[in-house]
Image 1: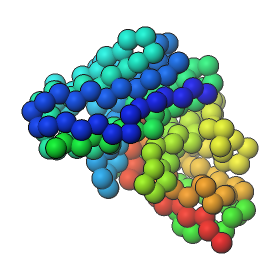
Image 2: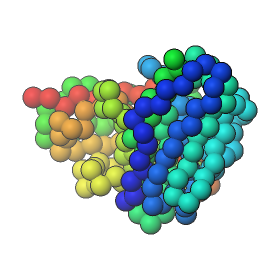
Image 3: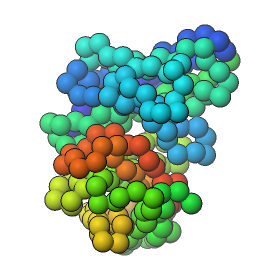
Length: 108
Length: 123
C-alpha cells in the first residue's frame, strides 16, 4: 500500500500560520483527511475530503492539495493548537487506510 | 462514556489470543462501516482492520492479515477484533472507530473514536 510522508515537527509562533504537508503517490487520486491528537486524547477529525471542515472545527483550519502533496494550514495559531497532526487516505488500490507518520506542532 | 467503548485488553504472552469488544450506542450501528486502529506507546496511528456496514467486506493491514479477524453483530451493536498468534509488536492501545459516511462498502475517513483498550504482549 502507499506511504504518506509528513515532517516530524513544525514550530510556529502564536498568531502566525502553520503549514503541515503530507506527501505520497496516492495523494493525487485519493481524498485526504486530517486529524488532530492532543496528549492523552483520541484523534479529532479536523479536515475531510481534502478541504472540508467538520462542524465545530474553527475556520482557522483549512486543507488543500496539489499534485502529490496535501497541506493542512492553521491560521492565527493558538497555544491550544499544539498537538500531533496526522494525514490519512483510503488507498483504493489496496483497500487499506493509510496514515502519515504524524507531525508534532509546537507553538513557540 | 461516549458512543464507542472498547473492552477486552490486557497482558498476554506471545503466541496467545485475545478478543476485543467495542460496544456502541447513540447512533444506528448497522448503517456505518467500522475500523480498528492501534497506537503503540509514543508512536503514531496504525490502521488495523475495516468492516463494511453490512459485514460483507473486510480489509486488513498487512501486519495483521491472517492473524486478526474483524467482525460485527448488528443486532447487538457490537464490533469485535479477534487477535491470534499475538506478537510483542502488537502491543498498543486499540481504538474502535466509526467511518464518516453511512452505507459504504469501502473505507473513507473516521469521525468517532473510542478511548481504546491497551493490549500488552509480553512474556
